[in-house]
Length: 290
Image 1 (tube, helix red, strand yellow):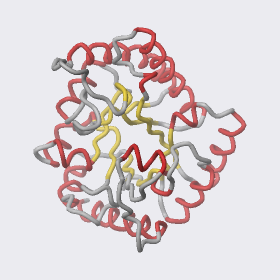
Image 2 (cartoon, rainbow, N blue to C red; image 1 turned 45 degrees about the horizontal axis):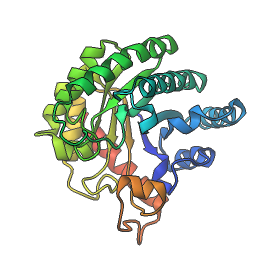
Image 3 (spheres, rainbow, N blue to C red; image 1 turned 30 degrees about the horizontal axis):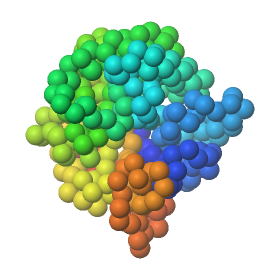
Image 4 (cartoon, helix red, strand yellow; image 1 turned 90 degrees about the vertical axis):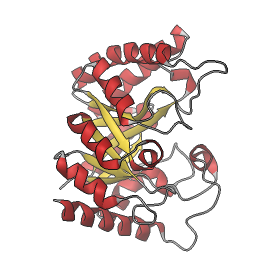
């Protein structure tokens, strides 16, 4: 059965935190994976990285990375200097993953997050061309490090380059590396895809990572995502990769601001118990589909 994880920011208001306490927490709750902010780990001194890596090894927890590039690292930018910053930053993230004995990174790594086309511009092709060319250069380091970069498909309100599975397939096929794959996220799929099953089946062997969450950003089982359809589609393509839940319930701080959480959906919940409930819910659906 697939390894199932959770994103650390379920518990935090800040993106940049001490990840160490979450290793033992997710182990105790029964998860296999802790997903962390890969940008923060990239900037850590090696001594701090070593503490995190050693804790994960002791607990038997796999670490995965996720990030949305900020504007200064936008590899689709018209500014060549900005693109160069982004290329170098992504290469350093690949090297960080290798150092951490981690296997994969995902997120909005093809452009800035959030990102919109400039006023009066309707043609995104030049941005895609620049992004693909930059990612091809990044892939040389990614391949050397033996890791995988997963291109996250996100809704039109957060980015304009890769909004559905078809966009993502075009992108990864143009990059042309087995180390560049697709990340599908049920929250974004609910907005952009015509069918959960068709998108997953269409991704097929290119699917490298899956994020799960409800239509309302709650944890799985608290909304109306068709989880039976999702689990059966993943089984249909024999998906063996990671599945990481990304619920966001709390307003406040950079996390609440950036994810646009304006009402407190954690009221009345113990967050640890809610994470454990959602994990049992997901594993039950995966088992039923297998």
